[in-house]
Amino acid sequence: MGHSLNLKIDLKQRRLFKLKFKNIIFTLPFLTLIGCAAQGSGNSSLLPGMIPFILIFVLFYFLILRPQQKQSRELKEMKSNLKRGDNILTSGGIYGKVVNVNEDILSVEIAKGINIKMTRSGVSAIVNPEDENKGKEGKSGK
Image 1 (cartoon, rainbow, N blue to C red):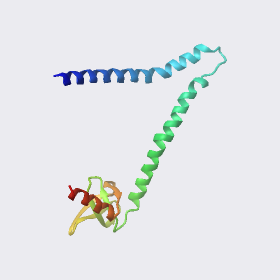
Image 2: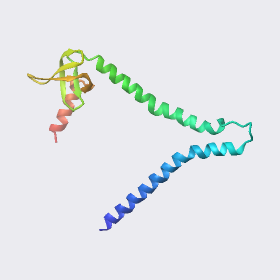
Image 3: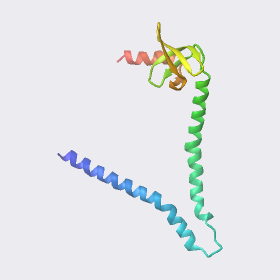
Image 4: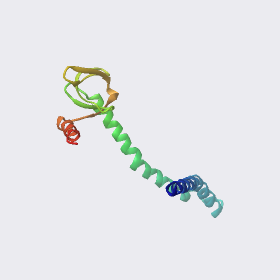
């Protein structure tokens, strides 16, 4: 009984924190603009008040957007360079070997004599046979 009461209190505190945090995020830009407008006379600009937001955007770009774009570009390049004989890992977690490539359709051998057809978009990685065997050994050892 005591645990459920603590859990309810924790959830309530989390919701309140989220609401407070959201309110701060949404009201801070407006307060900054109002403060800049109220401080100076008619010849002052809003640039000093906007500098923190510009810096946050630049930081956001270099820490989040740019690496994500680079990763997306590498994945697209990897999928376009698939060729016969590549060992792949599908997005469903199936290891296989590319047997045939026809534009967007791949024939993948997942076991001896068992081929499946799939699109390039279903490939999540090209793997080395050593990596594939390590995964199988780790599961059989348990």
